Image (cartoon, rainbow, N blue to C red):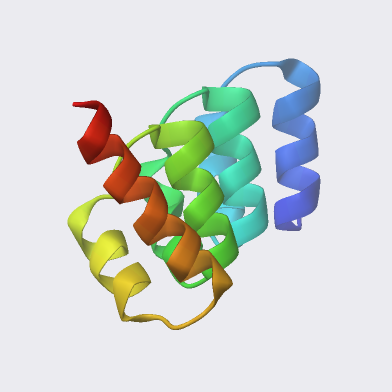
Length: 99
C-alpha cells in the first residue's frame, strides 16, 4: 500500500487509522494532509518526513500547529534558504508581535 492509498483510506473513513500511520508517515505530502484533514492536529510520526520539505513544513506550521514548529523542524527550517523559509520566518515574527 502506498502513502497515497493509506491516506485516502483514512480520509474516506474520516477517522484516525493507527495501522496506516507507518505507511503515511513515509511521505511529507500525505503526512501533512493526514495531520490537517484526518487528525486535525499534530502528526508526530510524520514530522520527520514533513521536516525534509520546506513547503510542507511551512504549511504544517500555519495550518496544523498554528504556531512555531517543534525545535527539530524549526531548526531545519531556519537553516534553509528558500521562499518557504523566508515566509516561515515572517510568520514566526508575526506570532511574536501578536503575543
